Image (cartoon, rainbow, N blue to C red; front, side, top):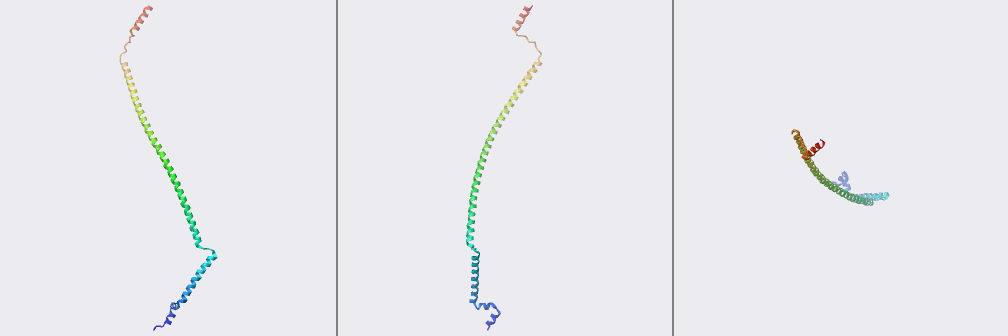
Length: 164
C-alpha cells in the first residue's frame, strides 16, 4: 500500500490539512488581530467614516436643495423676462401695423394728389394751347379798324362841331 507518511513529507499542504483545527485557529487569530488593529487605528486617529459620510451626505443634500431653489428662481426670472419680451414684441408689432396702415393711407393720399396735379397740369396745358391758338388766329387775321360804338361817334362828332 501506499505510505501516508511519505506523502505528507513530500507535500507540505497535506501536512497542514491533517491538522485543520490548527489552521482554523491561525486564521481566526489573524482575523481578530486585523479587526483589533483597525479599531485601535480608528480610536487613535478619531476618524469614524460613517458619521463623516452622513455629514457629507447631508451637506450634499443641502447644496443640492439650494442649487435646486436657485434654478427655480432663475427659471421664474427667465419666464418673467420672456413674458416681458413677448409683451414688448406685441407692442412693437402693433405699432408696426399702425405704421403700415398710416403709410398705406399716406400713399393713397399721395396718389390721389398726384392724379389731381396731373389733371391740373393737363388743364393748364389745354388752356395754354387754346390761348396760343387764339393769339395765332388773331395775328393771322388782318387787323380791322375798330369802330367805336355809336354813342362814342355821336359824342366825338359833337365835340368836333363845338370846336369849329
